[in-house]
Image (tube, rainbow, N blue to C red; front, side, top):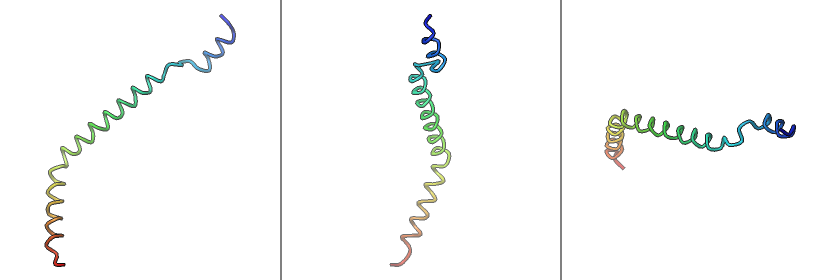
Length: 63
């Protein structure tokens, strides 16, 4: 074993972490997407009725 090889390994213990990092980002995006879908599912009906009533108020204001 070459001494230079061991010092390189100490400074860069896992040179192939690029795939692991990409996987972590994909999982993060997936969890955020699931949270957004859940939030829209839970609050979607309430927000829809709020915006419909707001639109009715705005359209009823005389110009």
